[in-house]
Image (cartoon, rainbow, N blue to C red; front, top):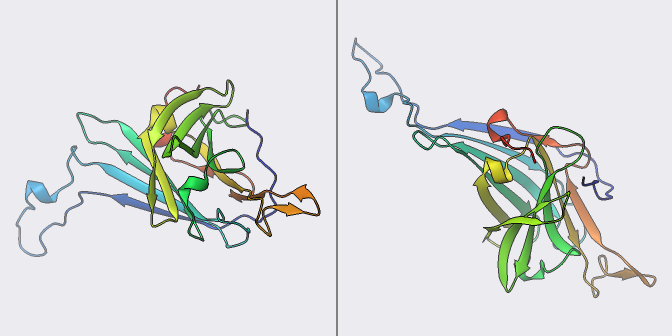
Length: 216
């Protein structure tokens, strides 16, 4: 079970946005019936996105600006659910710095609704490639390694099916330490690691479609 790392910030506001694709409009006049292509059908994917913002309040390159989850219910016959996770920062950073536990983004996943997180996703560089590792918090075993994407030097994302990366609740945190950094290096001979967490306390909840069938 993962225990939230130490942090000192206040809870940021949450903004939720839901989008259902494929909605059509009926004709504005007369008894005309809308064409089948204009009406929602069982083959439409359903997408919802929620974003939680965070203030510019932490020194270092990995100060989090926002975190998002995007849940896509794929249309039949697939019918599966995919979850995309995204973290954005206030400042540009080079993903090559994500080399170890002192420089990393971590997403903690509560898969069973009980106390603690059962899995985590961490963005790290392995053999010069940015990846997202899915790890069991019980065994510390890497369950899967997923492709990761960086956008504009400020956003990282990864995605997978809910059985692997789905959750009921989650929170993010980043850690950043650089020996030569005035704020995130050393102070009076002691190492200082800058840390940011979203939200500051508690968890961000997901709707039931994103809950994994197997909470292990």
